[in-house]
Amino acid sequence: MPDAPTFSADQRSYLSGFLRGLDEVRRRSGLPLVGDVLPLAEPAGGAVQLGVDRPEAVHLRAQDRFVAEGRKLCAEEEAKRAENPLDVWDRMVEHAAAGRFPGGIDVFRWKFHGLFYVAPAESAFMCRLRLPGGILSAHRLRAIAEIAERHAAGFADVTTRANLQLRGIAAERGVEVLTALHDLGIVPRGAGADNVRNVTGSPTAGIDPHELFDTRPLTRALHHHILQHRELYGLPRKFNVAFDGGGDVGVLEDTNDLGFSAVSTATAPIAGRRASSTCSIASGPRRCWPGRRSCCRARWCVSRARPASPVGPGRSSGTSASTRRSSPVSPSSGWCCRWGACAPIR
Image (cartoon, rainbow, N blue to C red; front, side):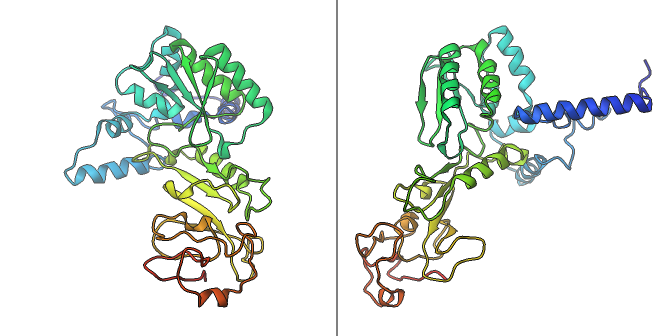
């Protein structure tokens, strides 16, 4: 066969259609596309080079800058540099067929797919799911229970990020658990290791009569955005994101790397948001907001504001903003304060 085979127009059309169909199936299953798995270039030396236009190349460039400064990469970064953990699926299948657990740095790579080899505590896999906002339908929960009975220890752990974990999974069952979850539309990719973890939202989103913003569309949109962007995998460390809708039950967004809080305002409605609500990032000592308990969970607030009257969080107490503005600074004033200064939202 010649080194550079040529194809007829019909053959090229057939292969193009075949690959498009294959990519669509892999996309629905949460798997990387064929072009993302196959090397784009192979020089004469035999070393595969990552295409500069591929999304994950941004991490290699960051590593290059780090090494150029004379510093040394840790073992996990060296492993990501040698092989993208999202591309080890075929090896995972081989291990499952042989009934073999991963060894060495592959234990780290398997976590990118949601499989954790938890030895020495237990010679088994733990599988962590991804449930955006902690929302799970009844039929999916029943299916997860069936997977746990058939392939795991018959129970599930509930995590602090409104998620589920299945334990007691044998080596030969790990891939089967993942594919069964993919069939349900649950993709655990990035549930562990250096990735954006399960996106959380208000526990009572959509049913809390006092909420300012329904966080369900936000958690769902970000979840799928993460799954479809390879550059959001292989971060320097794990990354947590949470959305708080300002209702009666908080999500503790200030304990996350990126926390969004819905806050009530005394200003006119903001474009793109419904009246009296907006989303703000509690990321640093920049501003304090009046009248909301939930907005004052940020680490940089030294006092926690409470509603001025027992009418429920997020609701007006009847006291005007101008009256509250002249009130003494205290935890009961309805203001979130830092260093003795209060500032209304602009």
